[in-house]
Length: 91
Image (cartoon, rainbow, N blue to C red; front, side, top):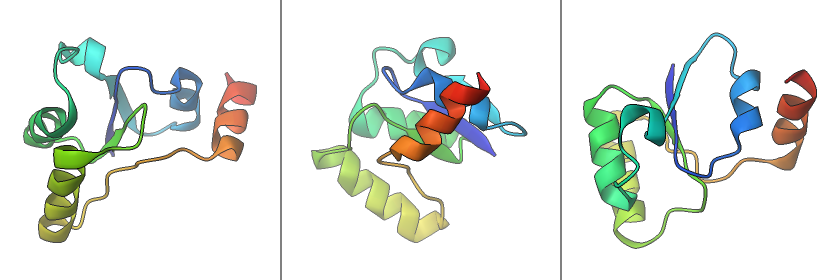
């Protein structure tokens, strides 16, 4: 799975995603993109999941719902603390 971390996403979580391709918006050169624009560009580049720093709101949330209906792919809008703790332990 190809996963994109938005700016400010919990970096230690990356280590828990062994076997997946993980990139950040910064690494992709997308630091200036937000909300719906970031989702559209990530989708066009083949990303399967986006882990944002904050819950998606407004236009981005509408785009997310529309894309999920069409493609069956999910956009992660929160990270549970247990997964983050495990990632920090494994880092």
